[in-house]
Image 1 (cartoon, one colour):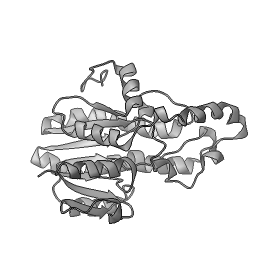
Image 2 (cartoon, helix red, strand yellow):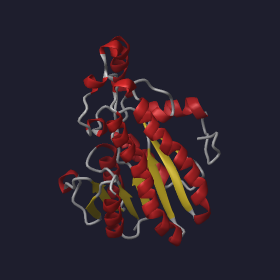
Image 3 (cartoon, helix red, strand yellow):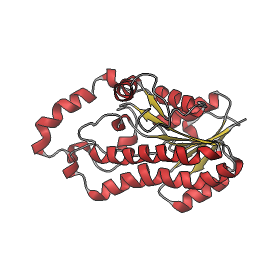
Image 4 (cartoon, one colour):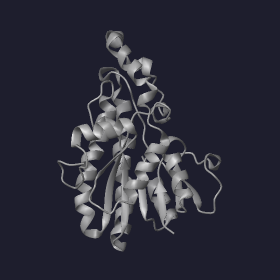
Amino acid sequence: MQTILITGTSSGYGLETARHFLAKGWTVIATMRGPNADVLPSSENLRILPLDVTSEESIAVAVEAAGPIDVLVNNAGIGVVGAFEATPLSHIRKVFDTNTFGVMAMCQAVIPRMRARRSGVIVNVTSSVTLAAMPLAAAYTASKQAIEGFTGSLAHELGPFDIRVKLVEPGYAPTTRFARNTTLRVEDLIPSAYAAFAAPIFETYANPALTTKETDVADAVWAAVNDPSGQLHFPGGADAVALHQARFGRGSTALDPAAG
């Protein structure tokens, strides 16, 4: 039985991914900042561990408690939507601490163990904002674009040790809670000078046709974990798939930096 450790499983994509792998018979180590067993189905194959990916101490304790794992899914993240000029740098640093440095720290913690075993998969969950430039998401995009480049390079670096590294790029999903993991309100980040510009953008975001479901992302993670090829990018949700095809073309694969 294989073991997967998933960060940020209290809600959204992480929660659904944990459910998906449990249903497939995997041992799941679900981690979150404030563990709450009630959000996941009772199972002898489930362990819940506290984890704050912005704390090196918390990471070390969780990884030691987890023991050998076959797969790491870096899903924990926070968002920010609004005009860049109105977004406090203090909050941008928090976004990078979780979305960028948190991912890197988790990778650094598990790689030595995977390398010693010459086996493992790392899946980094980013966003469709990395596939096409989107307004009012500059800081968030930057935090996720950093992980796109990081993951592509890491895939080359760890390949000789039989460790596969993948990207999952979810589409737009206003139902997820990642953007609510902040004390900042969207309306506070839209100065009056941006109001006319922002209004039609938020109307577009409200279109239910653009909504990526949590199950779409769980399916993408499953595909990435079980893919033996060099395919790097796995879009999740119809809108992300469309953006991926527009950028890379159909059937693109690979560790080729120009391909998906």
